[in-house]
Length: 391
Image (cartoon, rainbow, N blue to C red; front, side, top):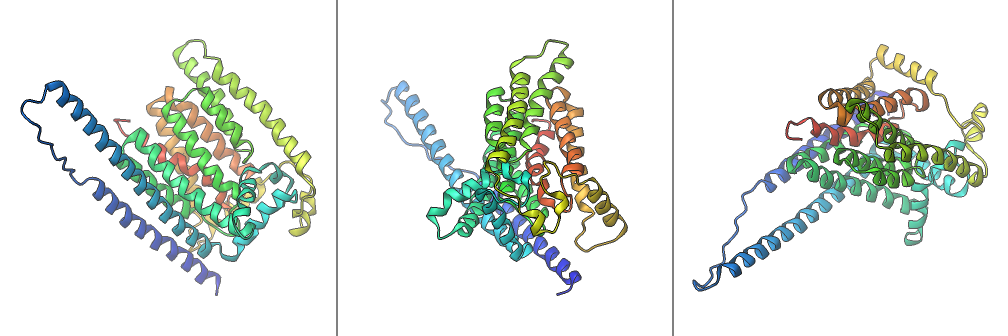
């Protein structure tokens, strides 16, 4: 099959999935908007008023509890369905190359990562290894891990967005999450830490929108640092946000959050260094990819590679529409800018943090590997609803 045909098939897979997603979400929204009929229970005339009030309250609690259980059951079922569909898209788009990502996770477990920088990204690979005894092999456990974490991510988007913005927003965020997920799928890599990173940043965005205190962010950082170096963005926000609020309020900053953020930055650097020093047996990437000049490096500078990539996509048309990749990053910056303009006290710190995230990608990540942008998806999928007036 030619490269042109391959681009057409990949584009058609995405279009079919998007159309199917819109239909499913539309039907679910219509289902939830149906009027609910609550039947009143006839009581004897001589029942006392206090008893009637207590019974009414108990009935309302029972109805709300049953409704909540049904809602969560629907969310779980739909999230699982979409997760399985997403895994099918992974296999259609990435195909046999997905096996290389599984081997990369196994390499981290054994201390034989592609690159030294990968050795500190142990959370996802260790979770797959913990699941392995329940399956025939590491590969089957990795497949289950991918589907399970995608389902959990979808469920969290539904539950947390509804808690913050209501029902219509939750389904809108869910749909946008899956559309952006499939948009960012690309050959050849999709690592275990990419999936766990999505969940970490779903929780981060919810904590920011809900204005949680420093203990929530510190706990989240304590987990995220074992997943990927993007955990440092959480610590950066912990320093920036209270500092900016204090400057806008012309008051002294509350010290708990920035001090916790600085502590996370310092300890995080030590944790990453120790994981790489103590767990690394040998990096196999220099030999595997014939790149001996990359051996032993703690940082891979991708600036020149990204400049060449941007020149390529702006001067040569492709049916894979890779020009949408920088537009995706512009959408992130655009949302961050609008949020900061509307409510600088609440969102300026978040906007600056995501500005740093996008800027750092041009140096520390290969933009053609669009999986590196998956952690930005929760910000777009959930954060866009903060633009509504009632938010």
